[in-house]
Image 1 (tube, rainbow, N blue to C red):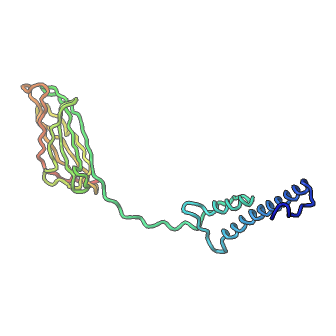
Image 2 (image 1 turned 90 degrees about the horizontal axis):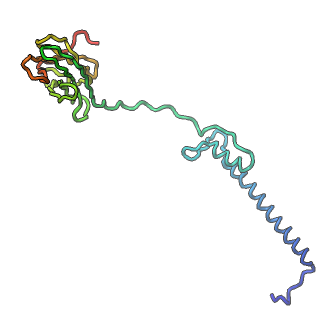
Image 3 (image 1 turned 180 degrees about the horizontal axis):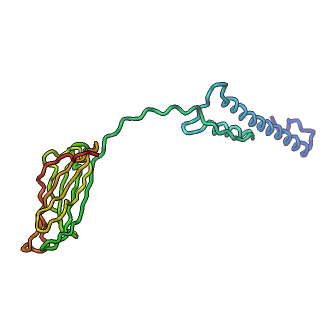
Length: 229
């Protein structure tokens, strides 16, 4: 329509501005009313019927969802109930495989013979490939101390070695100057049975060079100790 043909308003500039502001106020009020109604509708849809349980997102409590809706309406939260009930504990799973057995024990006798020497005797048990039961090996070793090189003897090849041995210990059966003496080696199996064997030490004589290592001979078979624990 041409501006020349438009009907002029009988209102002045100020009345026209007042009418425009009143119209805008009514529009804003309508938006506010609509915004207040929306949370109420959401709350109504989120409220469970009697006997039902609200399921929230994984790891989120039901009261978290309700509190958000209530806070939008100015009602606050305050609920601390969780979704649903905790179910019964499931059955115990099967027992896992027993891990490998590794153990070592040592003692340091001070041998006073015509030649004074200090040495260390050790017994070691280990699983060479980590496969657990029936795979262990046992060794007895001797060295000068401090820092000497071990001489090891495989005692798991001795007769009747228990394949399920899981720990090991070593101790002296006493010293006798210039005479052979014995070292006791014991193992404990996975089922609590004690087995033992012994090694013989042939000590030094005055003609042996200083620092000579006593010989350790382990040739005895394995036997169960009398009166098991």
